[in-house]
Every structure is written in C-alpha cells, then in structure tokens.
Length: 133
Image (cartoon, rainbow, N blue to C red; front, side, top):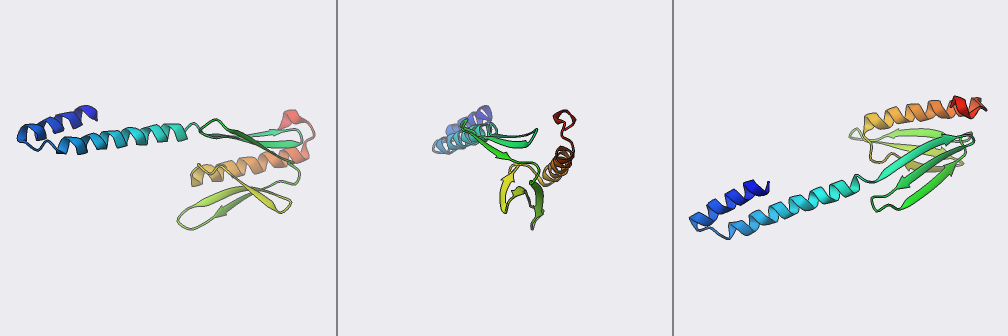
C-alpha cells in the first residue's frame, strides 16, 4: 500500500500537485492505525470451562486484564435471544440474573455454542463423574 501510494504521490508531485502527497500519507497512516487496533482487539478472548460443580467463564481483554465468573451448573440455563436484523445474544441465566457470553461471535456460532453448552450442562447435571462431561 505504501509503494502504491508513493508512486501515485510522485506522479502528482511531477505534475505540480504536491499538496496531494500529504493526503496520500494520511491514508496510509489511517490504514496502519486501523490494522493496529484490529490486531489488538483480536487478542481478547473468552474461555468457558465446565468442571465438576462449576462452570467458569474467563474473559481476557485486549490489554490482558483477566476476569473470572463462576456459575453452578445445576441451576444454569442457556438462553439464546434472537433480535431484529439477524442479531442474537447468548446468555447464561441463573437465579434471575443473566450474563452475556460470546459477544464477538456471529449468529451461527452462537447458535452452535448454545446447543453445545446446553448439552454439556444436561450431562453435568445427570452425571456425577467429571470424566464423562
């Protein structure tokens, strides 16, 4: 991108329209910033672990801040709410409170995750053996 912009800038400079070079440089800088912030946001992650008597959601922000949320699987419900424009939200609900998970996933991925979580939670409720979950 920088090579293409430089070549275009040299053509404008040769013609005498040298102020265009500054605007072309701004485009390259803005594109580089967009990539920087995109890659930084991609470092954020969310982990869901189901262990004996506990479902833990661990959120790690792009800056590395870690938050852990624990839920008792026996009372936990998986709720997938569909909204307008093919949008949906995935929640874990327990004791009248809800907790949104997988905010960054698309509709199909959230639907798939909701099915898997629901199946795993049912297995955890029925099976006292942690190896079978």
